[in-house]
Image 1 (cartoon, one colour):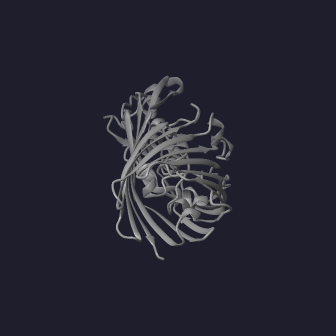
Image 2 (cartoon, helix red, strand yellow):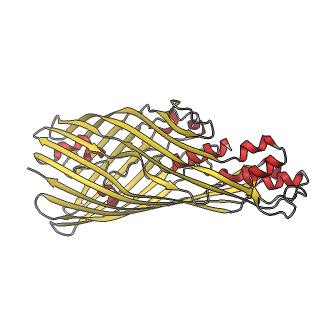
Length: 447
């Protein structure tokens, strides 16, 4: 039972950190990104996150930008282990508010910028039927009792867990233009991470047919049966468990950037150093003994290398290319990084077309290639390669206000794994996922 609780909390944590970008990092930080999927060479206000060195190409003045995304994600796991009550498990994540904010002050060759948003995490998760790893040990109880000469064929369990997670990442960058074509930036991001988990596993029941305890083979409490049968080793395992845990931690991410601009061509490059992040348990209830109050563990954010190219094909048509490389193999994830064979990378292409001076349409495509090995993949923590399509528009409401709207749909390649259930044999488990995002952003020039 302790293992089941631990798996559930790990599942909540991983689900909440797989919205966009790398295994842990959220790269979806603006409505402009959602509608184009290629912003590493951005010369707009969201360059405060994607390309700080390019901000010196803005007009002189003070700029503010507010964005929000509404995110829907579905994860589906199919498992052929015959003892489980369900063969298909579906988890949903809904993030109604995923806000980001940018501010830039540009004066001649110098720019200072501020960006803030959920650098990782940013949602909550609910599991109505759990996952195979939540209950496969419980599902084996009827077979175990039957092997002892106590015919048992059914089980049930109530699993109720809610989790929320957010890694806020405010950052400040300083940018300077050395020439008309070359500029650079240096900055720092502060990470404040908070995970909260609340829930329980309770009311484990099955239908053992026992002449003295349950002669009719009705569904009954597993605790009551094992107590009456004098099987005390099993009583603790099937007893109700409750967890109320909050985990917090802070870290710092140094950031450097470079931008080159020549006529119709712009190239942006950025390197985010690894964030060494240690979280600490603040435990109010822990029926498992797995989360001692004050215990610390590492959950680093990988270093990231980003490159972007934008080229104006025509006066009203621009093409962009972006590449992100996440150094997942170098972090400390309490040993889970040992199951990563290659670092995850992303490639994206985007097109923007100006209908007139006030309206711009865009479309983008992004391919994400995971590098995890089979040892990494489980129903609680899997990484899949994906293809995403984004589209949307920018509307110039006035000389000082721009509106950006976008929609993104991500399609993931199926993954699978053969799981060894010991004496019960080996069975296949498959993994799938979809993500849908709607975004709105407002850019405003104060002066």
